[in-house]
Image (cartoon, rainbow, N blue to C red; front, side):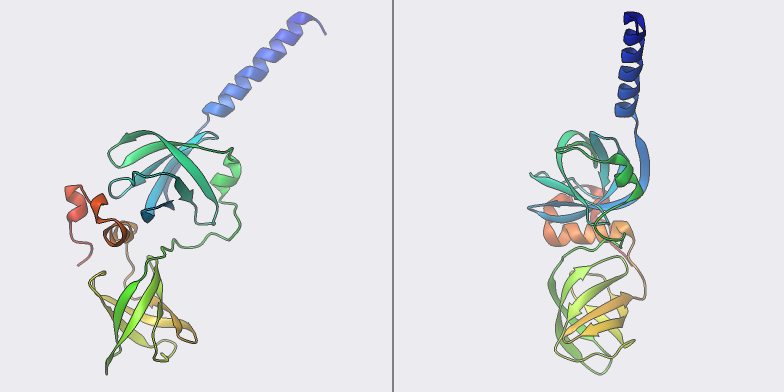
Length: 216
């Protein structure tokens, strides 16, 4: 093989490598979580490459380190912020990332709805009485709660708490004093994001739009 051929092959390989590095995948409305010392917050992945990712939040972006991106499959990636414009920001990955697996949502768990480990007291209105309970995690579709009364499967309940707008739900599963409930009316992703910020770090709700009513 002559030197000219080697040079051509080397140039082609360099061009292909640069093209791979520049390639980006647009991922509109893919929900994920930003995890940091302030709590866990909802975000939307906009695009990703093998070096970084751009995200959008529904409130101010948490300003703390380390900042970890957690996907709905359970995979997590430590991030470092590069730029920010309002509620959108670009980050680099601190370690190498398999972009194909990231885009295909391959992870340690099957893809599941976004759950936030929020915990606060609630009252459960079951029609004939109110009992004290505790909410332990929250998603758009439901929550996990504990209470001393053994609730029946499919039993309707109403959550009474200052942390949430009025929520009506039904019991879907139970295990001793733990119960999974499914909401009659689900939260939007924005609803969930603003609830999480208000409970964990109200200072993130700095934009006028963030102070709007969560849900009628």
